[in-house]
Length: 394
Image (cartoon, rainbow, N blue to C red; front, side, top):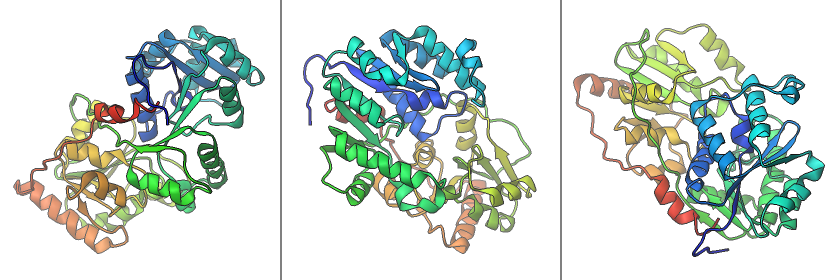
């Protein structure tokens, strides 16, 4: 484990995941990568690496700052000739990649990656990967030639623990990713003690030096909650609509929740056709919202009778922490991660117990209407706390 003192080292932050998701709302993992970009921009020697559709680009500090601004504003430049040759890609991603080619310090085809990094980066650069993306043998070999110090953030081991909730190809690819992390990383960062324990359980050998740093919670300035065909009391569930998030439980019981409305906030994911069909049938008092900006989304959560989170598995799962930080009651599945980071703040209910979920939601709706609910006293972890732990390691 390397402890840095004095001047910070040159750092190379992998931004592949953020660029690959340009044009889409940020997921939890995306938010972590963005938080690292934002924080590391405060230090003078920051570089960015991105694997694009046709090769790699290397960004200097100014380029990283431009990417940060583009991601914040979601304003990207026009496509270029190379982007127009790419078919089947999201148009915003193509514009983002074209911007990278315009602002980068250098770019290359995959076969020239080692040469590009050695030509521009100082030996011993600290490489940081927070997105579970681009940690390939090619990248690791190129970093080895630069004598790089490699830090990898592991968010969860869900693909190995719950393969039934993943795309079929995810299990094998994640197994390879985890093996590379254990074999090649100089330090592993985990978002929770639970994730670190899961890593140790799945690793085939002893782990490299590892550290736990809880994720920070950033709440935007609240905007005006959007109008819609819902009335109080309403409940919010937030997250990609995929099997692991267990929206089916809420749809199963909602007909028995008198008067209350359910707002499902998130984009449709994968392998969840039965739930999509039920949503397409427009069940009474159930509303699907997928394009809300953060300021409106969090204003909507602020006015809710509660946040419902029946997910079967989470590595961290930010929505319950964000809701608790807003003072909104939380009802969630009884998962170890929430015992670790939220303690006794939520109401816990086993996701297999439909009757308990039904009765608890009714009680929460009544408490909201009568103003008799408990006031939450929760101080969320901050990114400053997080980086006080990790900056000495990366």
